[in-house]
Length: 195
Image 1 (tube, rainbow, N blue to C red):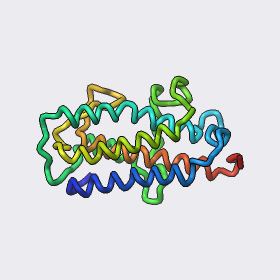
Image 2 (image 1 turned 90 degrees about the vertical axis):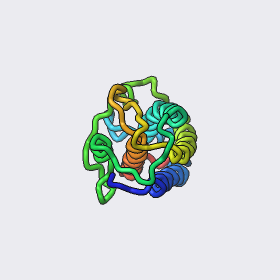
Image 3 (image 1 turned 120 degrees about the vertical axis):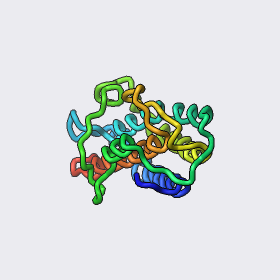
Image 4 (image 1 turned 90 degrees about the horizontal axis):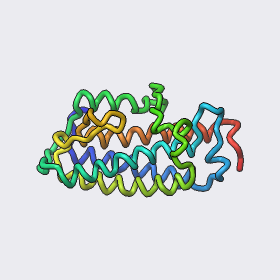
């Protein structure tokens, strides 16, 4: 992401997070368990799979973000933020195209893939996801008090690789947007059950 005022960045990420919560309540809250768990085929995720996947990421990143924000020695925020080359690459991988299409197919690692990792829960996924969004919004506000560029977070896939906090917050937001679109695509399929 190009240089942007911190207040604008946090505002954009917060607005997107609010939209995710509104979308869940509007489009997915009244779905039956059958609809939530319906798969177009055995290799394609259901809506519940998508939410379980996002919840798994939140279960990793929310404690990391909390710890980094409360323990960083870089507690002097800057006025602007710009992504690192690594952060920009990670963000571009998950960002939707201009027409809300998924430009790049990404293979989920097995720990975060509900088709492979059967320990990822598929029940109460909506409730858990909405709770995580509330926590994430709080963390977005708290992040304004630290240096988003100098505070580093370990990546869930490779903890030895670190993203700066700003890039990690951007990644999580656009990763959520990507899977919200995936869930909408599942719901729009002709064979999607009516109840």
